[in-house]
Length: 254
Ligand code: PGA
Image 1 (spheres, helix red, strand yellow):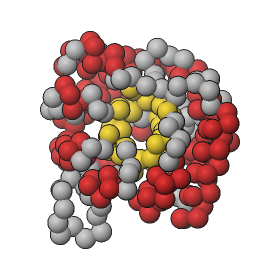
Image 2 (cartoon, protein in one colour):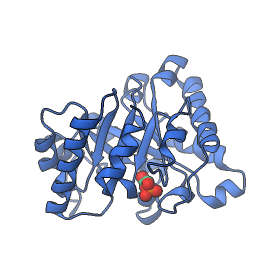
Image 3 (spheres, protein in one colour):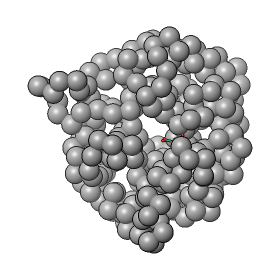
Image 4 (cartoon, protein in one colour):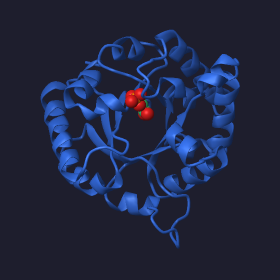
């Protein structure tokens, strides 16, 4: 079902104690201040997951997510963490295909298709990220790139599997740069994504897909972005590290 979601992506920030303390603040604020139906997801480094899940018990509006998972079920992959391990902590979501993983760790659409399969098999809900670089936008290739990322990354799924996904449109030029896509630019791509889903699966599935915007989202611009008909919330990096900013973004939906 289509939901209003604000997801925080802590990236490689916050040690164990710092993470627990930020999360506790977020929980208290969600409890006291959030009146609507929006869901909050906090995607932390692996080391926090189990403890965050324990802290979130009893708070139905808060879920926990990881930021990556390996494509194999298990085995000799020193230093990696499997989807099954993540799920065993009680974690519900996993970010896949973030542009930093694509850029710094060489993650391709083909690899991400495997990661998506393994995550779904292990009952994790992927927050699957797509988005074009500045160069691609300037060359007017952004629609083709988005289409290709969908086709090669997730359109091999059957309708039931696809329905478990959350998508996030994150233009690479807007991530961590302070430059946000205008609400019109973001809406244009979100509508494009929804239409692609409708032609691949059905209008009903497209209407039920949650599509988040990510890239320098903050309490000032969230309202206008989230008011667009095809934007169902945000994936928040920098601003998710400050409880007040993060909750003010969530409250945009109140
Ligand atoms: P940002 O990051 O909000 O700091 O731009 C968004 C993201 O990378 O998910």
